[in-house]
Length: 85
Picture 1: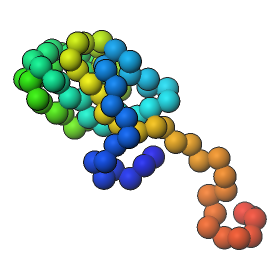
Picture 2 (picture 1 turned 90 degrees about the vertical axis):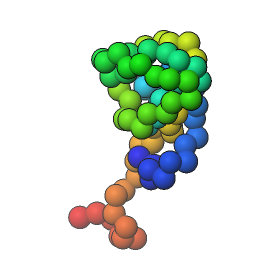
Picture 3 (picture 1 turned 30 degrees about the vertical axis):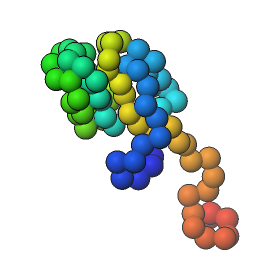
Picture 4 (picture 1 turned 90 degrees about the horizontal axis):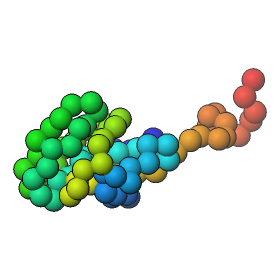
């Protein structure tokens, strides 16, 4: 997982959220909306940003998800130049 430094690489409309390939940490509403976020209906005023680890979101107009690509480690976790025992 990338370092959580609040500099993210992805912004997508909520309807296009891809929870298989991406991880989202913020929800932004460009105008007033009431999306369902992680199973709860949330009323958002225009210009509102919520910091949250997003698990699900409804396809709501004017609502965007912000995050990063999901990374996986596919190599040795050892910092040594020698093979793991």
